[in-house]
Length: 133
Image (cartoon, rainbow, N blue to C red; front, side):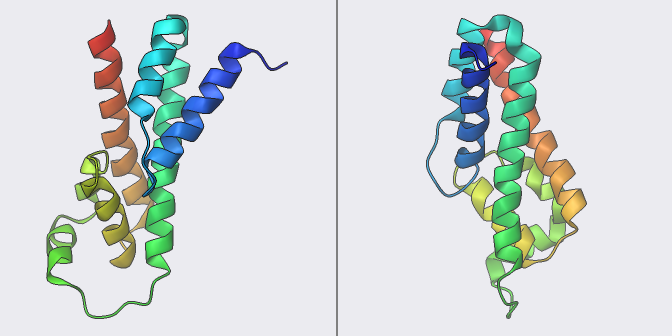
């Protein structure tokens, strides 16, 4: 059965996924709205937002990984220096998309990228939720 809570959480997942791509989005506002309306859904909302946003970031990583590798631009050197740990900042607007793409171009280990990305994005959503309570 599909109810209002399920629809809201599904919308949060989609919003979080799209917000992690180059498309503009406001998954933070969607999360805040859901937590305001359904505070008992805190854990589910945090998990869905984090998973959706992480998968969106990993889609940027995967697309960039498919690009032919040429000489690395100077601006990728910082990401190369810090490696997948730099993806803990993948939640930062504009910069985050570039970090995900850079990790793909550099062909950094996908699992390590996934873990660091999920950590950063999860902490961001947790901070938003904490600010509401």
